[in-house]
Image 1: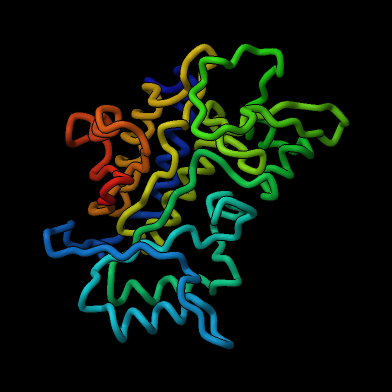
Image 2: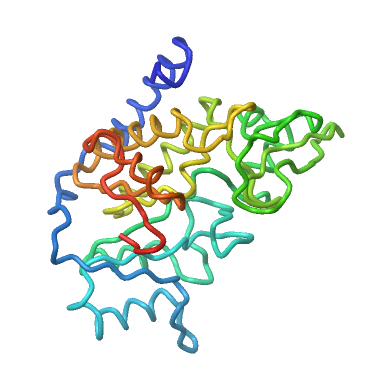
Length: 291
């Protein structure tokens, strides 16, 4: 932790994370075998299949049990949370299932027959989220949620994955205008991981997913997690340290939880997310040939 944060912050963050781990606890009932060559993974949106008068997750579950159970041992249901844009990757509430799809019991039903992958959309949050509204309302504990930048700052070195403005203006409750970092779109507000409050909230979400049955967690846009003006803001050392941290945290609650990095980058940069082979990602997402 001290490799990411100043000493005092590192101590505070460590204690908070240990409290999270203690609260969620290690559950032997969640122990399971690791991946093997026999595992086959299905990737799908929660509403890929629809039936009249039935929630799509129930329809998907019934179809899986009837026709796919013997073919697929793993299912990756793409972001199934309430969202405002980007096909689910602008999350409004990390701990809720989109009611148009179903509810948590619909997700948990799959665990009786297969293993599940969840998306952890950790780089950014929806501008329609309650967290961001609390930030704009200047509420305690949310002052550092977003990354504020002077619009005159030279950000020309920042790598841009999309041809959209990096900074987006918003007005706070007191009438002041701020420009916040938006890597992917004006609706997707980058989270400020220099804030311990943000770190702890997001590590809580991570462990919540593990407890809800995730056997594999895909770290969405992890390469962009840490920002330092004057750099490319992609693949920074801190991003790799966060992968290590999340592997340690998840293994403390579920030993065989697989960390998968979603890094849509050249191969030479992509494979660096394996770390030394034992300390960062277990698997790396390859868009040419998914895992």
